[in-house]
Amino acid sequence: MNNASRRTHYPYRLPYPYVELLLALALLAALALALSQGTLPISTHTLLSELLSKWPPISSPTAITSAHLVLWHIRLPRALLAACIGALLALCGTVTQSLFRNPLADPSLIGISAGASAGASLAIAFGTTLNLATPLTTVWGISRISFGAAIGGLGAVLLVYRIATRQGVTAITTLLLAGLAVSTFVSSLTQLLSLFSDDTTWRRLSLWHLGNIQNATLTQVSLTTLILGGLLCFFLRSHRSLDALLLGTESAFSLGVKTQQLQRRLILAVAIGVGITVTFAGIIAFIGLMVPHCLRWFVGPTHKRLLISSALGGALLLVLSDTAARTVLAPHELPVGLLTTLLGAPFFILLLVQAPHVH
Amino acid sequence: MSTKPITLCFQQLSVGNAHTGFRLRDISNTFYAGEVTALIGPNGSGKSTLLSVASTQLTPQSGSLTLCGKKSSDWSARERAQRVAHLPQHQELNFAFTVEEVVQLGRQCHTESTRHTRQIARQYGTALDITTLWKRDYTSLSGGEKQRVHVARVLAQVSALDPDHQTPRLLLLDEPTNSLDLTHQALLIDKVKQAAQYGVTTIMSLHDLNLVSPICDAVICLQHGRVHTLGHPKDVLTKSVLESVFHTPIHVSHTTDQHPLIVLDPTQRQRQS
Image (cartoon, rainbow over all chains, first blue to last red; front, side):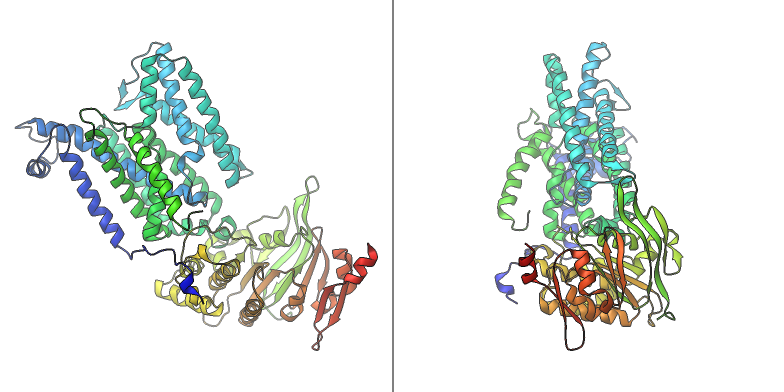
């Protein structure tokens, strides 16, 4: 064989569990960074003593310093929410790529982001006309925009799924086309609404579109953690079936995978996972596409390793991005979604140019 | 022949309906353990559909299908997967697995140690001459190399459950010789024959009619979703049958060991046009 002239294509693959360990350590470091950096710097010493002595956070408010307040009520929820959302986005990205059998697929393909935008726009627009409370009024820490986004996103995915499923069989190509059509349609609706909205509403809407994790609450953190845990368990339990799905539905069926049932559950899981991130953080692009794509170089496409490292990698990336978003131009804040796109797109173009096996 | 156990039995199978047209109509046949059957016929005559029905992925509109003594719907997905492997015509894998990982995917329906999986995968890697590619990126392989990887994968999938090979097993290959060179076509034939000796029933669609007689015990010739002729290769691969099915002049001669040798008859063709 003329192996020397052929490239092996994965000079970077590392054996288990080096990548996983490295990512976990990096995530811990990133969380520490996120907690200590900001307009009010918190020293490592204060950080450690606060974290170690004041657990649980409600107990003994003997000496409430500003550091204590900032840490427990602002930075910790925000850092944890960023980690959970990053992990969810990367996990859902991995699964969407397996569902479409395409390493360049993205959760937004099934219409969830566009649907959520439309839902959020409707919530803002109708809130203003009906003279309801301001869009930021919250129920259990969830604003009306968020409710609109969650309903819009789920609605769009259900519609796309119904269009692509005939007699109990979901055609993946139709799913893609239906996702595109529904996305375009609801995006036009969003734009139509924005024509009739006033400047304040318009600005709020575009800020929401750019994605940010401001005003994170512990309620949001617990809800997101719950969903992240559930999805991670489900995906990891199906890791062999996900591997088989990459061979195509016929081959996967022959290997004993209940393909239709699995596809339906995966679509639902992705809708819930991305839905919750859109609800709390708006649209944060590129993490779901990039993280699994890059990690395949290091751990290979086998889901057992890819899912865990994607979750860690997504969490790491969003914690770092969010810390950068609020510190780089302090006291002003950049929307984190804008930052991931600004850095993500050029990075991705670099990958396309460099990597030989990207199709 | 009739003393052998029955692996698969079709009774009056039909796919499709009178309204949309039939993709398969009134197919009845019995496949015995260790028997190799070829499916031949023009494009669109229902060969792949028949294989999908046999794999139980496609449910026929009427008729019944008995797989290893049970109705197809009575099998759990996992137990069925341990006995029936289907190699579709087109492979959709687009991810950078190593060749080893792809072959190992075939064993995921079995409960066994990682070491055992690795051993069996290696065994079929050697059989299909892909061990030199073992750690290579699947997506960087040529078409024929990829095909060999998938053949190794399905062979590994139905590799013996028990040491004395008593469990009936079924191998469904849709044009397995696609993009294989002569060396590897011969290798594939050997492996299919070898599996047959261990009791594996094989049904495969073939376009290279010259491969049929040396490997197969029976041939089913399909036309418009119906069985046109069914029987021993020497009875089916005749000038009259093939010309009536393929509508083109065909010349049939015989090799020294009496296998039919089929070529297009160009002189006749010119005269026709």
